[in-house]
Length: 383
Ligand code: ADP
Image (cartoon, rainbow, N blue to C red):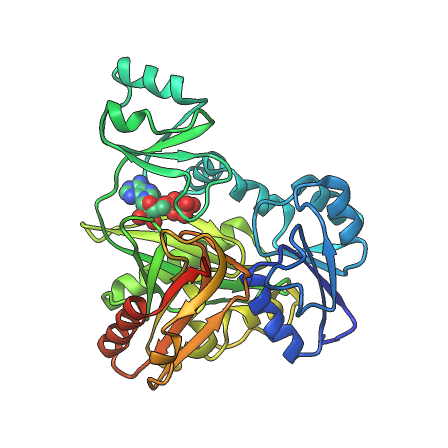
């Protein structure tokens, strides 16, 4: 039942939280936010802001006491505290159990294996010495993908290792080694689920990565894939969501291999960069679906309103400090251009500072405009 009396508490106050708040404010809901930075994107929009460390047990419990429903916009939070809040009868969505699996790539991969979810083959190692030993013993051979088990994001904890020289670049931490997948396309599929059992799936999107930074650069909606692969991707995403038994939304990132097989790479149990386009491009945005799902409200239509291409606006390579957005005016007059600026005070190389969704009947035209935006807008620092 809809009630604006329930307080939602979000752990994390970045841009994802900010875009959730755009919806919760539209609906007149009270949302509290916990973040270590009092100038984070969400702090000005929430009903109450709490400054604190998301990994600290006591801080998370204290914050949770004020909320009826507790959720996240980042996975690096104290799971033990969430477990305690669950035991006290609080609604924690996604559940602590789900967040715990996702925090560790080695546990996540094991989960896929145990649940017959197709994913690339992998091995687990305790540190770089073990990896090197594996190579000398012939258990491993170049090339492969190295991933830190914990705390990697936006490709920072991921490296393609081709020889002994690149092997020297890996950190000495618990890690997984994956076989290299020959990727034709990377797709993402969002699924929403609520406590009453309803589950909805969005049409797949296609992700294009920046080769240098390994970050998502463009998202195409819908993904330019054959209909049978689209259906297969949707079914696979639904199966992943069911196996996790998650309440909330989950973005399932997949590889479409050269042989047209789908392999799950990883999931995000929250709003995700790949579905930002849904604010303008879908009947129901991922942020509204997120609120509907954690409040156990009827889920919204996932249908596409218009073809769209989203481009991330990231900080220039060589700039650090107070942000300036250059050439913004040259671009935003074009039809179908929808800018989002996250309100971060400082820019850093590759920091996500905003995004633009271009909607257009013709997806090729949308892509052209998105490229033009990428080449024109410069996000730099004052000095
Ligand atoms: P993160 O959690 O930092 O986003 P991912 O696991 O998504 O890291 O990996 C980042 C990117 O690295 C992927 O989008 C893909 O382009 C590439 N990648 C990851 N795993 C593999 C693999 N097994 N084979 C080939 N490329 C991979």
